[in-house]
Image (cartoon, rainbow over all chains, first blue to last red; front, top):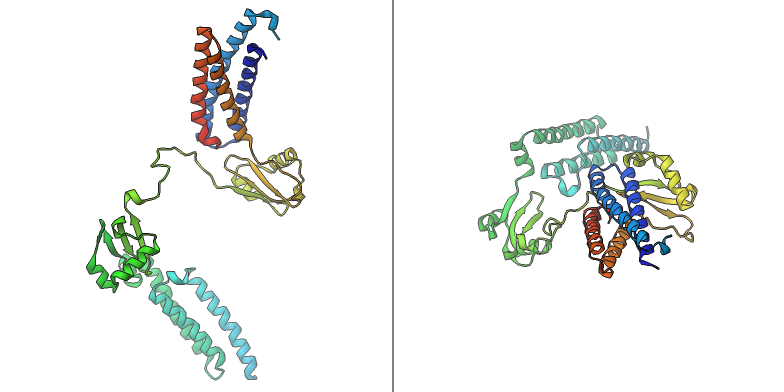
Length: 67
Length: 285
């Protein structure tokens, strides 16, 4: 597995975590948990966008491995 | 009227009367009754027993006597709820045996407790050393309650500075294959949700012996057919695990790359995930 695809896997996991947090947010009625999830998913979102930039960068560097 | 018929009728009436009197006097356990309540209970029973088997006694006298005793007990109970002074008189006061780690000898003597009695009571509370006890009080019921010194108390989450996630009581939503609507509403869920969850786990409602929802809204099922394996609720555990995996991956990338810019980026996001895990972890456990 190239580094590029490893990073892409990680990016996908981040997406799935975000979705999982959203699901939890929708299914709970506890206000405490809702705020914590909001904070957490904000952090995950920033990380995901950051990693996305990195993926674009990696793809540009070695286009022959682009998937 | 033959005597045996009279005894049957008397018994039935007295049982009914006694039942209602005891009900109105309140539901306390025997050990929680004060002396007066105990005595009036015994007397009420005694009157009922006495008049049941003695057909020559006037039955109205029995009812009258029982009524008087009931009224007396009832009034005292109600009055003692209202006034502290009456309560102290009827229920008795608690006596402090150990204060600030020192034994109060006069109080022991007043209650007729020897050192051995005190030590026995302390041992009942798992305290074998008097020096471990900060405070001990003898309740009017004869029970000794003990507050150990700060360092001898069991450790709590507060001591460890851990903030626990708020916990709600679990709700039993399915019993014997029937949906229980009230607990379901208490967990702010509805039957449609329950049906969807059952479908997800691929079981029919008739096969479910017991279903419980925990504080995170996850459903646990016990089936009649024990051969069918039901997955344990693991949604939140899975979420936490994937967060941890992602964080570890990023850490690995940061170590593996030689490009300082990329290293910085991975490290930054790894830290973000770490922070996210720290915040959400108590709720997902």
